[in-house]
Length: 234
Image (cartoon, rainbow, N blue to C red; front, side, top):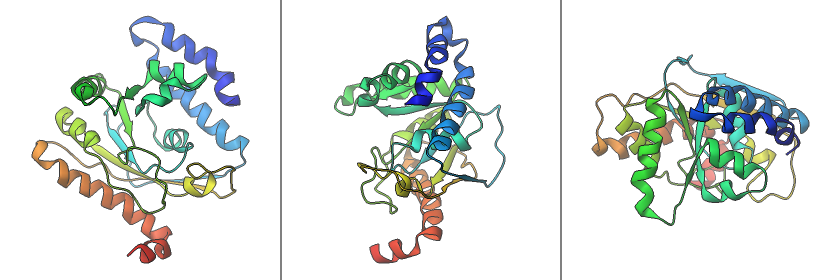
């Protein structure tokens, strides 16, 4: 919250400038906020990138979701401005909410009639050259590190926009600040950005296959770090 408050005037400036001319500047604000957050809680950051991504390409970044720290964590490893898709309640949060709903995209899960509007808005942002950040589990996982089922939305958007999907594994946020956890626990943050998966030529008939492939990539990394938890689940 302290980092957000310090940067809030600059976020407000980005929002107030018409036609989103300053929107890419948010990349630097988000980076600063993310690093400040982890510095303040004394958590070291370990990042691994399987390949170097083009900064001129727009991607759909998908990641596992276990903590309130996942949004800043994703911004630490992604080297471009990312527009997040988040639930409506994020847009209603004190202080943070006004900034989030004016820069990012909020999702009303209770109103299925707005799905097409959500898809079109997301596709428009991708075509404008902005990447998206989506947590396909839909909400914070209460039983990490094993994954919940992935929802279709991220993959429908990526296929319709014909943009690559980039899986990201947030390995240890669930230990640092687990969902609904009352306190923080010290452990290094570990992030892995995987190689992009092309959607070129795919149709909506390929949603399940694409979803399965990205989940397997994220899960394979989690299994390397937490074999005991996965063997117990099995």
